[in-house]
Image 1 (tube, rainbow, N blue to C red):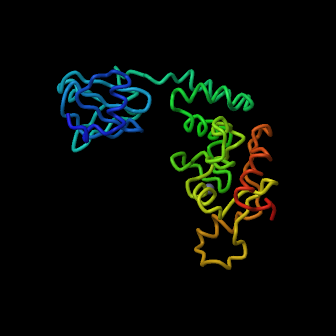
Image 2: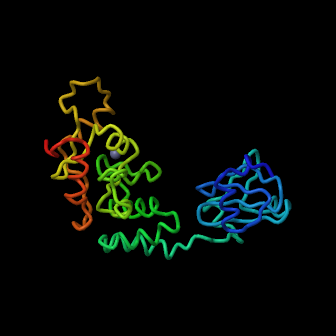
Image 3: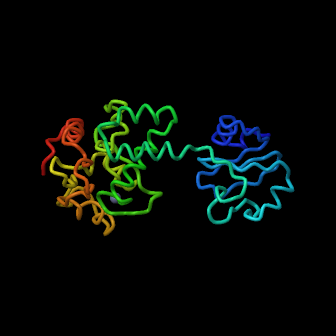
Length: 249
Ligand SMILES: [Zn+2]
């Protein structure tokens, strides 16, 4: 088996779950793979795998369309008979429930999910629910483009603060970059969006540029229904300190 063919994630899961496949392929969606060429072979997603003992078994699987690459029918490999679920999703979802119901419990929940390497995933899952899967700035709702942004910068946050949903806000990838990387757009201490150039003097703006920046300036961010889950004033103050800004517009 070629190590390059397998990819690091497939190789890792093949070993971690003791699948012992000679050829292992991974896809995060569970829907598109290259072709398995050695057997036993296995296709992995983040939560489990399907193993084929022989090439015939692989080629005869009705949910696979095998051409240049392998397309899996709706539902991905998880919907194929024989799929082995490894992810303990009950334990994981109760951790996410815990973050939403009692964010003060973040230090304990952090310990629980850290062992599973799921800190960032649990943080984002909680924020997706809290913010109804929409960017708190612009309302974009493509889940693949939404990210959990930390209010107090990651590098300054204590470990458990990395998972506390009150230290987070759900943002689209563009707003996350502008919020984190450059601080071009941020949140005031009264939960309003602040854009650094509201008078449009610093650059030229396309219609889309303006819609995603200038037009949002001064508007309230989308805040969670439950006030307990709003970004805390302390976390906001840490962000403002780090940006050298007083947090007002
Ligand atoms: Zn956005």
